[in-house]
Image (cartoon, rainbow, N blue to C red; front, side, top):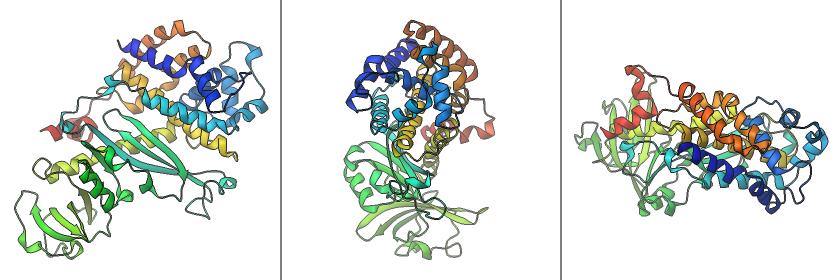
Length: 424
């Protein structure tokens, strides 16, 4: 069943007819010439996701190396001209949206600790510098060091272990604009860092019967309405105080679980003292205290690290920052192509093996061994070989792509360990 699902996924996403249709619709390939979408896209996925190409010239060489006949190889100039078309980023973005829409339900892990939520969404952004001549289109926050910079805003599904939406903007644009719509979070949980704090937004999420858990910034100073220790005991002496007035001298409790107000907004705030680092860490949430005590809330927030790992995979194993080009269309299009390469790798591996046992790092580092033969068959139009290639990939990943067994002392630091602890 897994092989059939993986084959259908590839055909729906990478078939010649579908790629040509999207190419015409986006204006990328109005006429089918030497560089057709069905030949170009698998080569881009292979070059970005499987090979350490070092520039557009490297992508060009990679494209030619995958052609069956010498007559199919092309010169650098027409290859570069094809990528600089205004329709190139539109074409790649349309394919990313299609790849996300083709969900595979079998990818969902067994997450009893999160059974109360329809979905757990992780929100984050990552920025990196572009060629300085792109500063007009993508101005950076740091003019001296990076006059041109782009930020990738992403919403990731924790249960699917894959992105569900992404947008590309100038580094100067506010991160909060790219949060999921409040009314879309009904019965869902949003995890985000301190850059996304918006009390008005959180109040609207609560009205929509959604949940949020966000890292608090150090400048928060709400008024305490109710205070509890980690063991549930009330602390009436803290009522009416400002958060910053509660220091280590006045309160020795390591963890405080508070109901606070800031103007017209009320929310739950958890503060923990880290003795080794000599600092407080703060979380804002609307999760109910009865179901989610402070200890579980702090453990739950650690799941947000998965989106940090995804961005690291994008940059390290999908060549997200590898191209210093002055062409806006090429820079933007290759960012979308990097994300598409990651999506295809994760969806195929999750379908073949299942997320409970799979190591995302191992499948990313070894994709040249298991994914490139599959993409080569697609480029050559040898769809009858896909099943055989997928079967080999499944055997390979089952032996070389699974998570390493952790010592008992480290099991609670893994995603599976955290989720299992939430169910206890």
